Image (cartoon, rainbow, N blue to C red):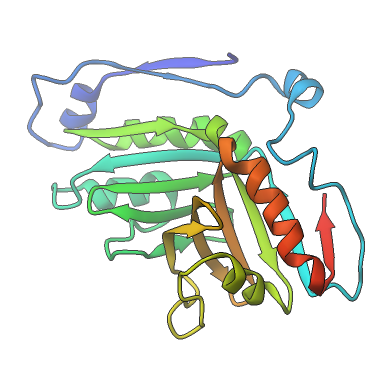
Length: 233
């Protein structure tokens, strides 16, 4: 591990003028990402063995693994005074409060509603520790931040036939009227589950557990084959 810091939630509460929670304790935040030189030599993404570069200018489907991003789960009470404002200050993105919504910015930071008290935060991989620290520094009271980066990966699905691939793979309604930009939901996909998000007019993202990555990667390649596949690596 390359860095660690211990933060005191009592100090954060005092800074924000909030009532102190005597049941809380100091929080140790550990950078789970190895140093850059070690990461460059040893890191292997969950789909590296499948998603090797494949060029096809006429492909109807474009796949890309967005490997080694930072994945954080946040739990807390959005009705708690200052909670949503603290998250926005730490991340630079507003906390989505409506079910199945996703907010993101141009810096590669996204926050997705998963449940009334739970959100998935995805950030550039080399900034995950900084964002995790920022959340702890801004938040007070009862909340939880967990780095789950090692257990997930993201696949980008785009191209003229991307929606056809989704229609073959999931019962979720992906028509633009039902699944506009900024929507994200847990979904059944083939015989597994994942988080399906629409990040732009032309792109969907699939947040996949590492344990499902090989199966779903092979499914995507097979489901896309009839349309022609371009793989960005």
